[in-house]
Amino acid sequence: MYLSNHIKSVCERFGISLQPARPYTATDKPVERWFRTLGEGLLAALPGYKGPDVHSRGLKPEAEAFFFLDELEQIIREWTGLYHRSRHRGLAVPEFPGLQLSPLEMLEHGITRAGPLMIPSRPDMALEFLEAEYVTIQHYGVEIDTLRYNGEALNDFRNQRSTLRGPHAGKWPVAVDSGDFSRVWFQDPCDNTWHELTWEHVAALGRPFSREAAAYARKLAAATHRFPDTRRALVELLDRWGAGLTANRTERRVAIRLSQERLRLSGDTADGQQTAEAAMELPAVQQVTARQRQEPAGIAVEAAGGEDDEDGECDASFPGEEDSSLVDEDEFYADAWETR
Image (cartoon, rainbow, N blue to C red; front, side, top):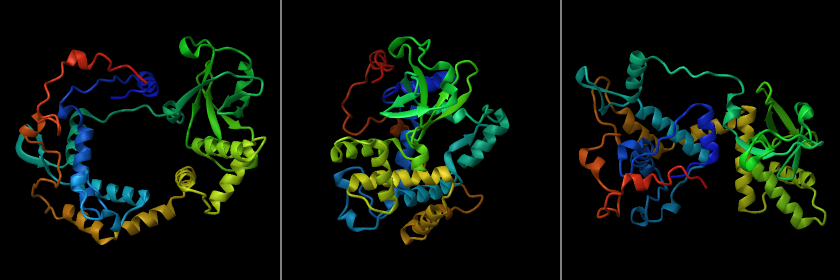
């Protein structure tokens, strides 16, 4: 189990309690059970599936068709929508024995009985979830990974120490989006309003870039120039990637992630949607989704790869741990809240 300081701080700000799952208790970890459902119900039927181990790999799966990430995401979304509309015998209402519901019907029933969950929404709430970097505010602004950011919101705090104590004593928290490293956000401690701080050379660049791309550009600049210029290296790198030119697999991986981030920021996802829709027309994908659509209306059947666990499955040990003795819970939770 891993709990980062970032996750703990976000949960603390929103009043969310963190409760570690009990050891060897499958019902405490529904997400892991969903991974199994997804693997057995969908992924195993797709071409190119390699299985969880070498014994389930099959013969030359790399020779079969494969999907890009946006295509696979669309396939999973389509299958999940069908899955939530299929009946599960594990979902039942005590007042109506024998009535089997789909996950969507169970959700509607729960909202009808308990009411919807009211979550306060404000435009800057998303900034609360960003990773925080602790920096000093100088006369030129703040510096993160050798890049300098500035804004009028820093005028009242330049060359001053914050009231923070502990490992970040005297420093100021700045929210950073690793997908768009051209700007960061500073929260005014007086009225808690958020203010955007832009990179000093963002006007010359004219486009967003990721933190990973900035780090790679600095690495290239240090290797190719006697006096490294991060701005120049970043401009050349992004221009080359924009033309579809990548020098190696590392550049291609970073460029693909950056292009996906640009689509998310601009809201222009038409091309990606068309590609993903084309993947849904493949025979193998249609065969898997058709299996979910075969449920007749009004007839309760168990969904393929459903969430229903037998009693023996809930109490069973994990593979390779059949002979392991139960772990004392006090000993298991002794270091549960320690972070790396």
